[in-house]
Length: 126
Picture 1: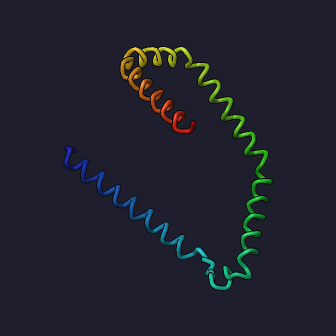
Picture 2 (picture 1 turned 45 degrees about the horizontal axis):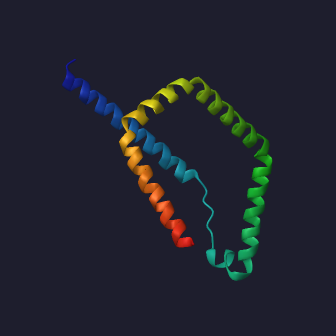
Picture 3 (picture 1 turned 45 degrees about the vertical axis):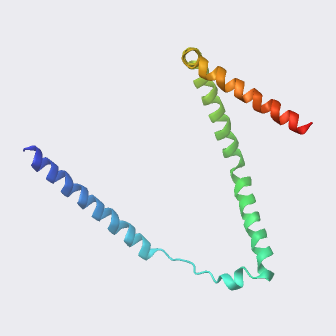
């Protein structure tokens, strides 16, 4: 097989896959039952507060049910982040050192302007 035949075959397979995927989603969409909302009745001034309360209650129940899972995921993330920073501490410090030396003058200029702005703001407040 030469390159042109491979490209053509790849294109045909890609298009067949795309067509199959589209048919799957269209079929799923047809079988899906959609709830039709009447916004005039559901969100009028009488029902609006009740709907908001229902939504808040549903969200609170959802969070309460998942609270333990959420907390464990947050703690796992904190641990992973801490381990990552401990593992790469030397690399990060080396990079910071190189960056500071490389951008030394730019940083000095930036700091001068920054402190000038702070002094101006303080003098305006007084």
